[in-house]
Image 1 (cartoon, rainbow, N blue to C red):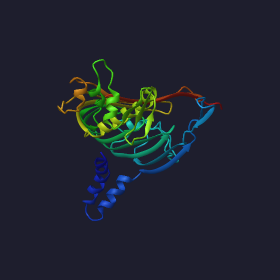
Image 2 (cartoon, rainbow, N blue to C red; image 1 turned 120 degrees about the vertical axis):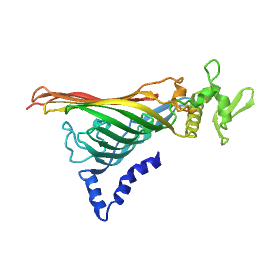
Image 3 (cartoon, rainbow, N blue to C red; image 1 turned 180 degrees about the vertical axis):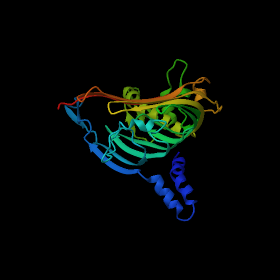
Image 4 (cartoon, one colour; image 1 turned 30 degrees about the horizontal axis):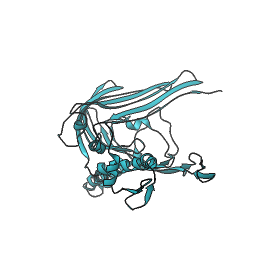
Length: 354
């Protein structure tokens, strides 16, 4: 996927370099005209420290500290601003532009987004990325996209080619094909360790991963990690603290050993945009009802009992001003791909006193 992202970024530069002498510079300026390069660092304290008390060896107090939250955002974008979007003086990296997920932008032509966000939240570190190149014409749409949401644990590459049919200036329908590349979602490495009663032989798995169980005497048992360090002296600690880590590490390692999988699907969708100063609606949706079975060992078809499934995504941005005092707004998007679901939303009311 890193190679694909590099190709996406270098492809326009390569194309322009083939232009006549001097002309490629003019072409490149046209592409980046009205685009915005931005970078921002944000931070703040995380959840407060927690005191943990113990009376095993007298009263003892341990303080569990969580490091501060932060985000580092870098990006470049050229996306026409919709009428309902505020005109920003600066981009600080915390904006939520739901319209970036729409299939069609406000204008026809070429648009792009490259954004990466390194973030730590409540002690957990994540990498979020969203990159796309999009060209919208009257009769067709072409788009390539890479999305990674570390918090939702989803990442994939997607390319689509669609026919577009416009109904007036506000509504359009589209249909075509989609190619996706991702890790083998649906694959669970622990399935091969399941017993007939539904439990898992976790101790045997841990031994295979290098852990050991030592019976020092009939009344004492110790558990050691692959380095030989004792990590538990009771079955309760072993099962409650160590085994979850063993299973998580094993699952991650087995998934990393498998190549990314291609998915070929048919897609139909719609886009609707209406805007006035007092009322606006922007909505879009895409549904993939049929997927070609590639017969791959790790295809999602296999983990879905060789049955078809429905993947979809959509969004809605709504605003209404009843009068110069009161206004309502609703914004959100929802995605369901394979066995992953992720969404964002915002809803509220504003009342201004003059």
